[in-house]
Length: 243
Image (cartoon, rainbow, N blue to C red; front, top):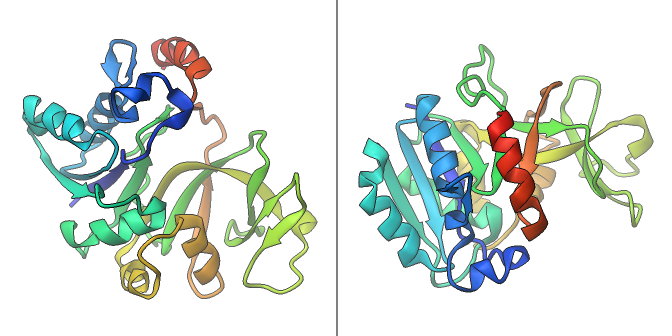
């Protein structure tokens, strides 16, 4: 079964004042909500089950999905109205809603891209996780060796390096930016029980990257846009038309 999780619980503070009255997932780009763009892209790629986590204006997202008949597929809600759990905690809470024998594609609701989502899980020898990364300017990078295995993380503005490998030299490694799109395979699902209720998924990857195969996937011609800020909304309209 092809299954995916869409992160739609965030407060969307960078999109204020729009998100004072609606969730980020329902902010429109090209005439349709961000959630529509992600759900229809996943559905076209063959995904049959999706879990959407909700918190900020949760009822609006639930009503939107119901009014669209859940887009004719199995869409489930992971309710975080009691408190935001961050990306890792969100996955941990949602795991019981998934088939535990199939990989899960994770997708931020505010990411638009030209990525072929159908290909990410169709690999002959699957890793434990596959993280879509690219060469773009940011302050925070994931660190990969020559085999594209995750070794750590760095903030180039502060010089901070995080890794289970002591004394890791980030200059010897590939520095790539995380896209917010990744796939988890069932072998790592049990490890989530060892994590706290609330945590970021990068914390999970950094904790276990020395004992699991967390691989980076760099798509050379990746076009990706994070529609997280007001000034990117207008650019997003153009971006979608180009895609």
